[in-house]
Every structure is written in C-alpha cells, then in structure tokens.
Image (tube, rainbow, N blue to C red; front, side):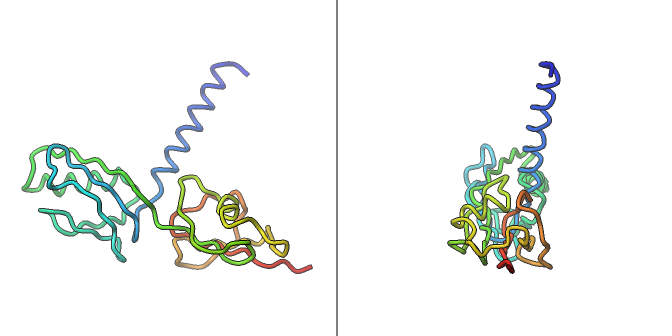
Length: 171
C-alpha cells in the first residue's frame, strides 16, 4: 500500500469519526456549556429539560433538540442576532450526554455514561460483560429509549439514551 493510499484511508476514517460525533443529536437530559464570546452574562452551563428545551438570558427558551452542537450554535447565534447582538460568536461544548441503559443478561445491569463511538459490545463490557446465559446474537436496542426495539449486531454504534437488552439464550 502506498503512503498516499494509507493517508487517504486515515483521512477518511477521521472524517467518519468526526461525522459520527457530530451526528449524535442533543436531547432531554444533556448538559452543555455555551460561550457567547465577549458576553459573559449570556454564557453558562445549561441542562436540557424533559422536552429538550433550556432557557438563556435575553432570548428565553431554546429548543435543543437538534442534530448536533454545531446546529445549536447556529440556532443560538441567529436568535441573538435578531435584535440583541450584531455579530454573535457562539461556541458549545457538550458536557454530558444522557446515559445508556443496559438490561438483561449482563453482570451489572444499569445506566452508564455515554461515550462517543460506543458500540453495543462496549456498553455490555461496561455492564460487567455477558452472563453465561446471554444470547450474544439476540441483543435488542431501543433508540433513544422510545420506539420499537430492534435486534442489532454487537458492533452497532449506539446513541445517547439508547436502551440495550441482552436476552437469555435457549439451549
């Protein structure tokens, strides 16, 4: 493999990883730090309520249910530009995402902090690994904790708020 081909692969992998991190949408229970440059009174840490909304000084309620932090930056900047600041510069850092839940045939079922790039297998590992009765081919994931659960492979990337259920195998 040439150096150019190897470099192209590394760039592609980096782009996919960055895209996966950005595609992690924000939702209820997430905590963010918002910095409006030059406006300390508008900056701070905010937690999205049960509907994914939080309140900021001057602009009031902000719907945080967006596809990612960059989208929220643009939304807040537009709201501030509408009668408050001429050229707002907004930066958002996600402090914590909502947890993931692992249930069923794992050694320590419960809620675990979400990490970008987590898979079903890494979530099961955080939960102490599979029990001897676990059916590792029958793992259901409910996206965001709502909607129907679907059987997914162990290398599936999970999202904040997902519920993972490991079923018992039948001999």
